[in-house]
Image 1 (cartoon, helix red, strand yellow):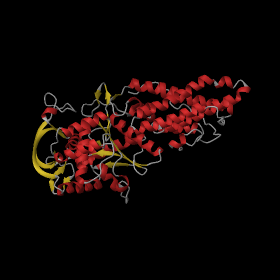
Image 2 (spheres, helix red, strand yellow; image 1 turned 90 degrees about the vertical axis):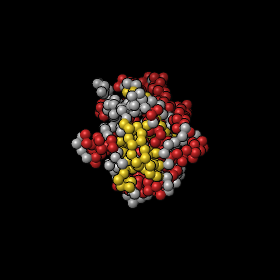
Image 3 (cartoon, rainbow, N blue to C red; image 1 turned 135 degrees about the vertical axis):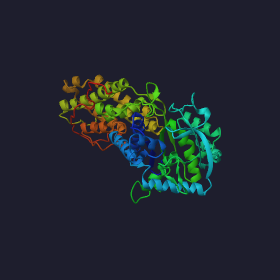
Length: 510
């Protein structure tokens, strides 16, 4: 982040099939970080979108009896709809079929050719249409299967255009050595650096047999390789995301780019080399997250091993899905999605520990103090200190991209407040007029602690956090990190009971 601005991207999603939980995970994690940076007072630009060119799209469209454009329009709309259901606050949704994007891709590609970094040559290699990528013989699984999709590859030979990737080996290594935190987590940094260190082959960056793509400007019989087209979206979007306004100078380079580990090479090797060749500044940080696994295997549209997020959203609400994925799957590592694990987190943590706590606090303030939160008597400095510590630890964890740890730190505060209810027993204090001061302090501390919890959890469960603030008589829009400070809320607020925050769900989503 520089000068109070923060530019965050997800990979753009390939429109060859419907979105699944893996896409939801990346978008949710990006949105959590975008919201947190807005809490810090930064100007955020959050980019997502769809990758719509390439032979695989044309094949999928033909199979469905559609033109490639019709197919892209339908599938892109589903990804856009998913973003809305996930409550994702992206600032722009790019499509690689946007005319503005295509024109800028052609301009940048022409520049690479003019500088001598793109040249004509012949190529033959094992090609996986699902990956839109070539693989060396040694990378294939037994039986010449794609290492990612486990489907047969085919030998492809053609004359096309190449990018001098090999020429950037030393510069890439220098960059990696100068910035050892550039790729996170460390294991992915090491993996990418080894790829570079072992030597780089020049990259075929056009296709003679693929018609659905951006034409090579000086050779319209060929189209630009879909991955070159796709990677450039991070740059092209800034030129037209806001009509009449060029955001390149304000936001470039990206502060953080998120992606899954299967596209590590494209982003951590090819992408920076392209930017070096074009004379453009490199992203400040890449975060490579793991897979959301089902049955111990990576979810894949090609294999059909996917989890549909929509039934879970319909049954439990979007905040439950956001919470489960962010809490259960440690960012940067693989994690397993199970219906049983989801329901367990929902029932025990969201419904019992947080939802019931809110109901009890609002109910007791209504019963014992006419619905008005008592003033702070100053006797709970220890709890106030724990709120301050939770705020600091969450901010540090999010800066380190350890979102699960940040949530854990806040959840300890939730559990602390639940223990406080049992330790103080407000229902007992209410029976003794001589202990009215203790009751006032307890009710204030519970309300103030919950207000801070809501603000700290707002990036993760935004709708529920705003409901908590409203139930406590606070401004639902007051969610800046500074607002989490003890005593920063509305004094003398009147609570407003609002029913179960996380209602019981009788049947599990499937």
